[in-house]
Length: 495
Image (cartoon, rainbow, N blue to C red; front, side):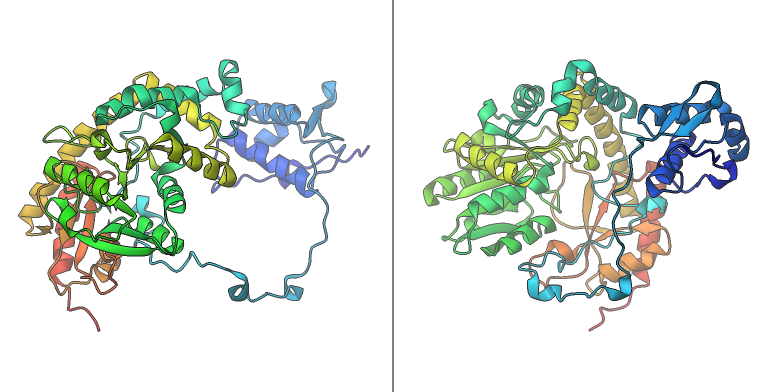
């Protein structure tokens, strides 16, 4: 056993790292032991000396030491103090190969598919630092019920929910979450279903990917809207199926424009992405009639149905489906927070059974703790309270943004919009909004250029999206003013 004492001045706090002071101290010591800097049997600085050196309270160091003892990084020896445990976790030994001797193979020859060639939305990673973030789909910390979500997460960590937290569900889902979706979420869309008709997914994107994998082949044709959600287009392109784009008008997709040879139609009827127009009931019925006559499947992405202001949302296509031809995709990403990555598919049991098997091959199931936490949050009424709070806030922001848009002479594209969390905008024809977005970053403004939403690469480049889910109402007018000023300075599109 070594008698060496680890000096207090060899431990430094890093202000850039996340966590409380206690967590930072705990992490530093654990990393020192794992890296071999602190060795078995060596004595740690006393809690008093380390606290004085780091400028923290003694109890903070003591708690960190106690937690490290619980994880067998340290041992406490009576009045002698704390020592690095003889059985502390260790990083497996291996031999480092100098980087200069590592040969880089030609991955272009080995990769069967490339998924990193699609053009992304122009969105800075540090958009939260911008004072005028007209960013779509991000959570507003002022609207998120942090306290109750945390309490629900702690409840899900309790002994009563131990099985839900720790078990491998194999191909199953949390029964409490399924029950809540069946009894409270789907009835609001007019949908009646049974447990065998529902599959929990890692968000709507995951649901769309699985649906595409099950429905499409290289010989089949998928129809999508244009403009449309870019993520769906990239999923279909990588499935290597045939695609046909149908332009939307002021009432969304027109069923009369559908081709005869079609296997699956992907549609956003409640709030079209990105224009937010709503498909009227007459078109929904016509669309279902054509699906029944032609024998194709409708994949309904029903995002943002909760965010309706001027009138109640129309019934989902799935609720009007008498032939079982609709695969319904829902998500909690917009109504709770996007990092949750929790969605669901509602479809015929035969489809869900196959989707469940596919999910099991890729990721087994979404984490049990996340499912149970969401189940508690929903069942205790916190979800409805948050949706109600968001609806009021979004309505106020929408009114303010519409007023500012009119004041500064900007143009809203598309037809009337009764909900959603964004505006689909049109700049003058000569404005390239990708270039506009980059120039606006210098003024602290973030917008989303619209060209990525179009299927045709030669589509107009003067559209853009302005969202109000992440910007305080008091900053909206100034942000709109800056956009108008920059548009006025824009030159023609460069060839």
